[in-house]
Amino acid sequence: MSLSTELNPRPVRVSPLIKFSRWTFLTMGILYGAFFQRRYSNIENARREKEERERPAREAKEAAEKKIRLQEEQKMLEDLLKTN
Image 1 (tube, rainbow, N blue to C red):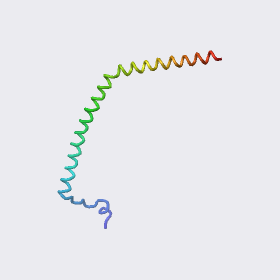
Image 2: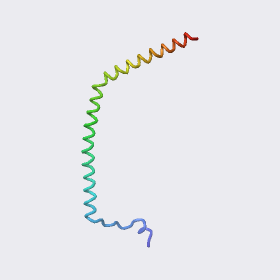
Image 3: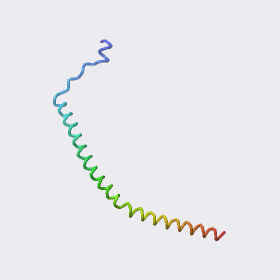
Image 4: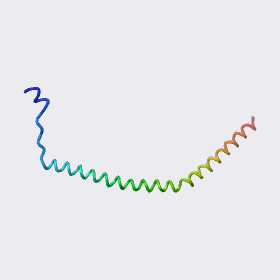
C-alpha cells in the first residue's frame, strides 16, 4: 500500500436516490426558509409601524414620569437639608 493511496482514497459512488434526496431536502429547506423569512419580516414590519405610531404617547408618558421622579428627588433632598 503506497502513501498516495492513503492520502487520496477513491471516491465513493453515491446512489442516485441519495443524491436526489439530498437535493430535494436542500431545495425544500431553501423554500421553507424563504417562506418563513417573508412571514416573519411582515410581522416585524407591522410591529415596528405600531411602535412608531405609539412612540409620541410613550415618550410623553416617560417625560411625565421623569418629571415626577425629579420632583420627588428634589423634595427628598430639601427634606434632608432641612433636618441637618
